[in-house]
Length: 451
Ligand code: UDP
Image 1 (cartoon, rainbow, N blue to C red):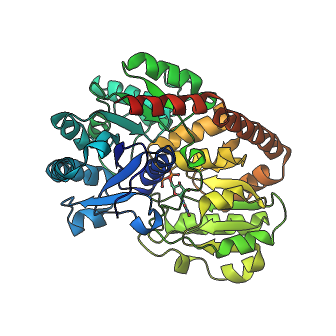
Image 2 (cartoon, rainbow, N blue to C red):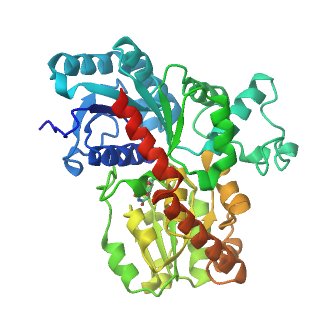
């Protein structure tokens, strides 16, 4: 059923169909809906969000033309190229239908689209509808991406192994090995996709899921490079009051009852997000390292995250007996609830930007194990800039895992990280309650109302 909010302004939101992009876009939608806007979500068939979780929005699926082979390839970069090539016409048709049938008091005021759904730009321009870009990764990562594109255009890539630990000039503390290179496709294709998402000439503004208190200097730099206003309104999961889950996989909430039985700050929560994967050997080393650390753990083993298997059946023999009540394994967790739980004292994360923001917002220090792309930039910032975590850098080995878990959860080093993480949590709260994010949100709402 069509939703009609009081303001008469309809906003069309176009999320990129991956979990780490759907969540912040729908959280933004929940916030804007609470401000009186009607929200329409235009989405691909691939990884379609579940409309019944968001009765306050209207959903419009558009055909994306992806083949079963493309989807099963798991190549997110190639999938995004196909979506951008195929969705322009269907998106335009979808909007034209809406514009024709719309009542004047409920017109489409603005299109807010994920930077990787750049087919939206020309459609918005053709239909003369203002557009705003949403960036769901960090501002520091954006700068690192620009540097990578520049170095590549000068013929400096691939970087020799001997340079991997060198600091990248002007990107302190990032090293060459931390630059956001993806494992999904060739560097050429990855950079082409990134560059396509960079064009903001005709957008009215950029919304960024980050905060001044985390990335002041990176934000100042990107503001200098952009002619349009930037609204850093993060963390979006905190502005969406009472947001429903946008999980593509079913959350196993039984882990909360298990957490309820654990003591304060004792549990390490382990999750590598929605796309990262590990080898069978890494799974084994993680498993034995966690057991030997003697810390309770809650571990998300997502189907497909271990070499195309379900993962859980690969766990070493004798593992369940050794774990007993000390571990809980699920295929997908209600992550925000988990991180907010008093029993959780550390987060072993792949450092996706949402997971990083969610951990910081709850004051939970991190054990960083990035796999690809922006995760490496985020992990470096967590350990070297905010100093609220440590990074597992070498090949995964059970002894090293055991030491790192103990360091984070019980040693003095970890205690220092926990104190800084709690400080950062307070700063984030201040930003949301009358601070920089709060002001940016108000300005964003004003801008949209002015269209
Ligand atoms: N997430 C979740 N349950 C899980 C694992 C992850 O709800 O078991 C959510 C998490 O809260 C975050 C998103 O999935 O909002 C993952 O996004 P992120 O940017 O951290 O990583 P990505 O999946 O994009 O690599």
